[in-house]
Length: 160
Image (cartoon, rainbow, N blue to C red):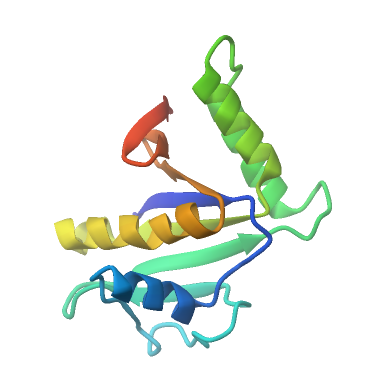
């Protein structure tokens, strides 16, 4: 079973994989696609799923882009609704309010499934760097299963 880390993005802009990889390359992180596992056009911003190779000989990270169609009953709205339930009432927590407001504005979700049976620290770091692109360029916020929502490297809202 995989472990998921997501970026909830409020930007309308879904970048092409090549744009993400170029940005990462400038920061010293080299990633590539496993096109034998999942055929994908890395120059298109219409991608739905890609297999991201961070190291030869390791299983790739499966990344998918879940977009909404604008309707209130689309699958992304259901997923966001589930996360709103997980976050719960904000009470006096400014961090919870921030996460709730962000979730309500989310236009798409990048969900990365990490192959926990075959991943090392480089893989976790590569995934974090990949999702950081969305934080810095697509107004994203990161959520990790079993942990919660992050602002930078700081856990701001814990989820159980």
